[in-house]
Length: 208
Image (cartoon, rainbow, N blue to C red; front, side):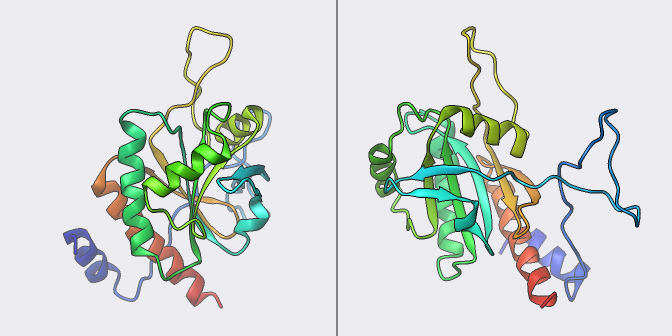
């Protein structure tokens, strides 16, 4: 068990600890919006409708009541995506008996990554596709989701269209709020993500 887990248990005892939320709502002047109590309002991940590795429609409705980790990749990515997905194998193993935790990997090259391509890719990582979903669809929708839902930057490529190539993992709660952002190629960051997933699970268990 990593040392920071012991520090967490010692420091927070009965888990008197909550995760922060990301991406506050802003008004037209760029100022943070607040509710009547003065609490910051946060954006939700928008609705989407994509296709999974079995060529079945997949949307936010399929994640209702779930906590999920979102990431963006492409199947012929030579290095970074392989490291990210190797870390997601660890996460899947950690929560293989907990269907509340889902993994959602979205291709940023949907014109190349068809459902059949994603299916073979999932097999290569021995993914349990009841828990780990590989998605493709219309490029415009995927890039809108990445930029507006997860605030990922668009890289200039010299052509008419930009490209998203980012190693972030995003932890999304049951209300579609982003509660954590992690460097998906860094095992220590993924350890922290696993710890914070447990914190989020604990939050929900105590709010029943």
